[in-house]
Length: 60
Image 1 (tube, helix red, strand yellow):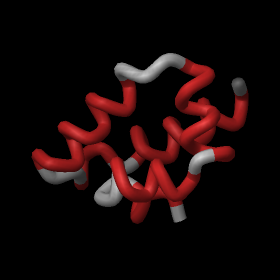
Image 2: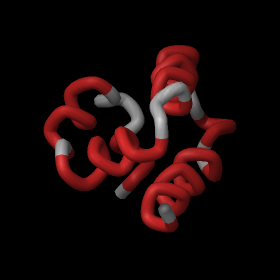
Image 3: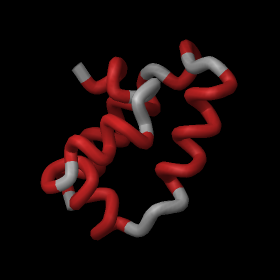
């Protein structure tokens, strides 16, 4: 899923700026399967914003 990969790439580009909390959120995010990631990013955006609040600032 190209769209999901692009979003993860944006996060990885900023990884050196992450706090410990953000790194933990990223680790949790990476444990999710591809289809669920896609759903979080595109179909359940509010849920993503709630669960991964600290990461969303890197996706703007």
